[in-house]
Length: 313
Image 1 (cartoon, rainbow, N blue to C red):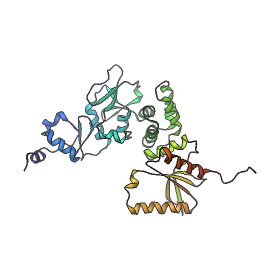
Image 2 (image 1 turned 180 degrees about the horizontal axis):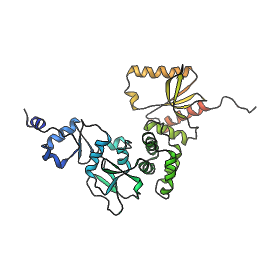
Image 3 (image 1 turned 135 degrees about the vertical axis):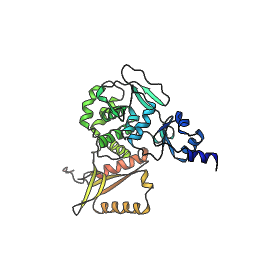
């Protein structure tokens, strides 16, 4: 039996997040920790913080991890707060390295200099902050407003829709808070996006589709429309223009992970729709720029073109 195997048997991973500074007290070695990370037995959501992979990736575990690199005088904000609230706004490339925790200092306190924490300033009122498992975090409403200003346009739209879906952050609530943001960088974008917020939209890329339809001046569809057959809701469409019998469906990364039987089911479903007079427009992962974007936007325009006019000539 190797020394490494003995270490593994004698020093099981704890049932909680832990810091590198705790390795000796836990009876773990850095060699074993590196091996466990490589094997996927430990994940590192933030610099210097380790979570055994057998623990669920839920809010409680996330909070316990993030609390290890923050102090009582700082508030978790922006994308880190979104992550705590279940709204992940990190790009895939950013997840290849451990992101810093984004925090802001409470009034009267300096920004943090803790390793692995991105400290900043933010003018927060008491109503902007909530306690989650003993840690100060910006509320879902405040986090949504901040991300609506701070993120790139598409990601901001997706974040706002996610907060509407998961936390009931409504257009009315967002509009009421807008005056406080007058003059802030990014508020023009936020004002433009707030009227478009809809909690029925279920995925990040569906929000991209939603935004592109608006930006191209198209009539906005009904999200998540059910086709009823024999009084039974049978087919759900991502976006539907009901009177025109046209729909847009988004096929994301998971489309390529489907079995052949699932793909066949999709084909049969869409064929049923076409056989019953529906125009089905499919948008895929790479269809948000250039010719691909022009293609499906053009298909939507054509599908919505009136077939009857009152004009004689």
